[in-house]
Amino acid sequence: MMKIEQLNPTDYSFNPQLLATLIASLSIAFFSNNTFAQGLSVIMTEDLVPSVDPISRGITELDTYFGAYDQRQIKPLQDLGRQNQLSGEFQQALSFFKQALHVARVNRGLYHDSQISIIESIISSEVALKNWEKVNKHYAYQEHLYLRLYATDDLRLEQGLKKISNWHITAFNVNLDGNRIQHLRKANRLFKLRMRVSQNTLSLGDPRFMMLAENIKICERELFLASDLNLEMRRRHPRQSGDSKPRRPSYSESKGRVFVSVD
Image (cartoon, rainbow, N blue to C red):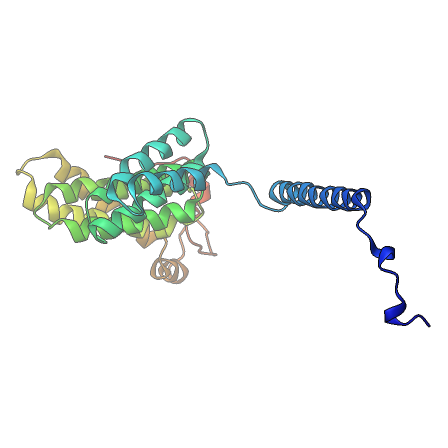
């Protein structure tokens, strides 16, 4: 075994060529690892990080430009929604309209007339997508909004309720979603409410009084024909024509018939 004092100092003399080779090797290793890391970063960015969809990008850009939930976003959001409607992208349009509604509520409260046009745009997109249940819910909210905003002596309430009753009339007349009786009940209630508003806002002799009265009469008649009471009466007093098995009137038998008029 070699003792320490026996080591020859010349065995570890400085070798410039060896040092240069070592530095070159370390440099290659460093740059190779750096290139690999950059390549890995690119791969992770492209393959693992999802791309930002146009809706999120648009909303983010508005947040950046105006500030989060700034009310100045409302009009640009509505404009983006309408542009998507025109191009047939109704689902994307809904996202912009709903964001506009959210910003409006944050800035102006739960009940503000600026919501009316936004909700109407939402409804038009849902109608295009044939989401009838959602259309019903939006009209129900719109009715609630009108009743919170306007008194029964305000003509704007009549104008708003007219749009909602027209929806239920249309859905009833063409059996849009298979819920004719529910639409008929809602239309009947709205007609009666509109009659109250009309008595406070319209002049006597206005033709709308006659229209409302006639539609209320038709609704009441059709609701009675579909009622359990009518079914029981028909069972107890069958027709002389030999109809011994009373039944509810079949609305499918009168397909295409307009029971109530749209004003």
